[in-house]
Amino acid sequence: MMSTATEIDERNHLWVILLHHAVQLVQEMRDHAEHGRIEDIIALEEAFVGLTAELEHMDEDEIIVHHDLLQHLHHEVMMMRDVMVAQRDAIITQLGGMGSATGAVKAYIKSSLVLPEEHE
Image (cartoon, helix red, strand yellow):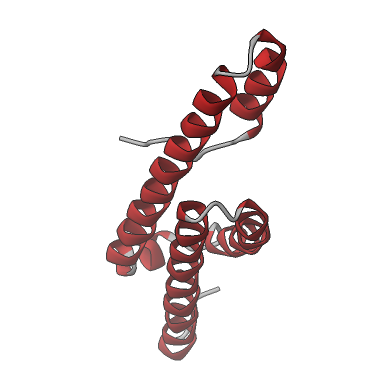
């Protein structure tokens, strides 16, 4: 069934709103990561996961229309990833001075911090 031009315009407007909201969420997550507020990141991440689930339903035409916004979103996610990696590494370095008993803790931190993959 073909969509009318009005339906497509309404859907495209919704995607623009969703994408802008996703970018804002990721920027907030990065700000919280820079200040070490992990509990805030977790709450924002849950909202972000729900939002990106909605974005997965975009068809090819909508993705092309919003390519620039998607690129910006990807850039923000990668910047957040870099901040979180640096923070994780700093925590592990601090734990390194505490002796071998922290080996399991360091392994847990490394394995539990799931980061977005870098895509070519």
